[in-house]
Structure formats: C-alpha cells, structure tokens
Image (cartoon, rainbow, N blue to C red):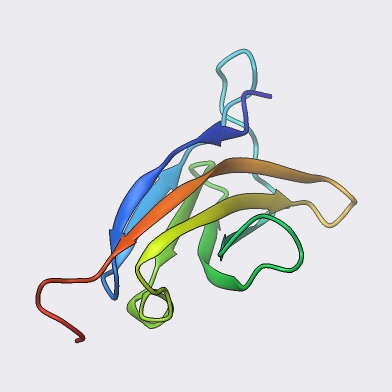
Length: 114
C-alpha cells in the first residue's frame, strides 16, 4: 500500500475545514474501501495520555475516497497551538490502516468567536 502519507496544515479555530483522501495501492490503483469505516482523531500529543478530539470521517465506497471534516463545534474546542492527527480506516476484521497523519497548527480567528 502507498500509505500512510503526511500532511501538515493550518486551521483557523471554529472554521470548517475539509479535505479528501484518495488511498492508493502501491501500483497506483485505487484502494477498494468497500467494507471499511474511517476515523479522524485530533490530539494534543501522540499516545494514550493525550486529550483527543474526534472529527468527522466519511467513507465513499463508490469513489473510493474518505472525506475528513473539522466542524466548528469540534474546532471551538481546539485552543491555539499545535496538534497531531491520524485518519484511519478499519475493516472490523482486525485490519486497521493509517491513511494520513500530520500536524495541525491552530490559530485564533481575527473576527473572534462565532
């Protein structure tokens, strides 16, 4: 497989942020997501002791993609600073793959709270 990949991004606290992952096999073909669910977790640090926030991850099996979204309700809980995240897929049969990992730099909005 051709994952996990790393993607670091900036996020304005309280905004909606959405990105799409198109997992590929090592030969470049689309990874079949049929039978998989996805999770998108943001955390203060790596490891079990970190504070975790669950964002939204939706699997589209027709197009073999995962849409990840940080909604304003989750984003408001993220104080300015740097966080880590993982997007994983799970087949329910002891197969868990991390598709994407990285850092999120959270910045307070100029306009203040919504």
